[in-house]
Length: 580
Image (cartoon, one colour):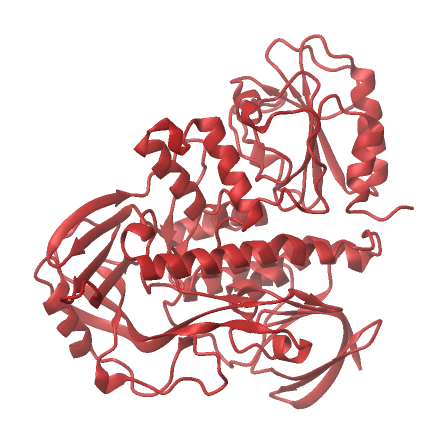
């Protein structure tokens, strides 16, 4: 019987991310998918800035930028009248913008990236059953060569809304379904609307209820959009039959004439649809598992949470699930994880899933205004938002620092906070068991708090490079990173002592950099260093002299220490790493 460290079930964007990250972290894994060939469907099309940041760290963002198109904003129309134009413009401290990319292209890029690690999707291979014992999971598969079994130390279920991994684990998947059915179509139109903008047009009945809907998301190609709209009666289906009514359905597919009929009713400009590449009907449910882990079984993406696609949150949330889990599984496989490290996956990601499900349901029911700042409507089975408690805390801190709370009276600042949330930049884990609480600091003073996303900054100078670097260049390692801010009067001995203690507590899986303030002399101790020539690091992190910042492999701040001591750094790292 074959033995494997981790089996990933499902080769959509979430499963491919999990497998690629496991391989980057040095884990022997396999990934299976029941489909013999990938689906050529433009389902999830919205790619959030935070997902592009993850792809940057993974080493594949360049390929994605080559294929994607900018998502500049959204044009709103109600009962034939234009509404406000939403501009998806983020401030310059955010390295990536909102983008649109067909899901099949996302899957191709991730598959090629995974192949670079020597791992290929085992297609046409279906999960039949799972049985876990204290040390392994016995897995039965059925593939092109017939039935076979293997033993895995862990199994990650990325097998969608109808997940067999979730059902086998006995997880509750509670929620409800929306009564409406929709149809999707990947088409070209000849209207003269500005490129790069989504379109949302609605019609209301006499009671003010939306009775007709058109949502168009731009795709690569001239005049090409992924369109969604309410399904006509002649195409209504009966659902999946397993009680989870979500996703694409079988039966009769929409034709070009069905899409043209909606355009004729709702398009803000005369438009002729052509070149139909793909169409389907689909349903929307909202459900959330009660647990993300049962023993050696984990669920991620649609296997854990499904919801309206408002704001392109589903796929992106699932990608972050996988990214959060992979580095933790890698430490567990190595045998150097703290005893409860894997429990932190549920502790951190379940509140995120709960918040996203709740928010997207509210937005879907509240209408256009609730969808501000997103590629909204029934458009893409896509990504995440802020965590329930965690994201709310992160957003409140962001608003306190920028003055964008309700008391500021600034619509622009309020919109920026909404856009950062939709971009998934406000996801945070301040209540995580892995995070060291800040001591004696006021979060409103600025900079990221423990549990927040570690922001990028530019203008870092290195001795042997004639060009400036970004902080993200230092954070691409699959290890933790310790950043020590050094001012002109700092003593090097304490920094060295802290670095040595942190390296020992992290079993050597730690990168350490001194970040020198302008005017600080070159350190005499043996630590790699960069110079904060433009002062962007000090500004972005509100860094105080001698302060240390510990960044996790997934780009979140595990703690900030002022002053740092070997004991506090080691204590924080022991939340993640086992002792010994």
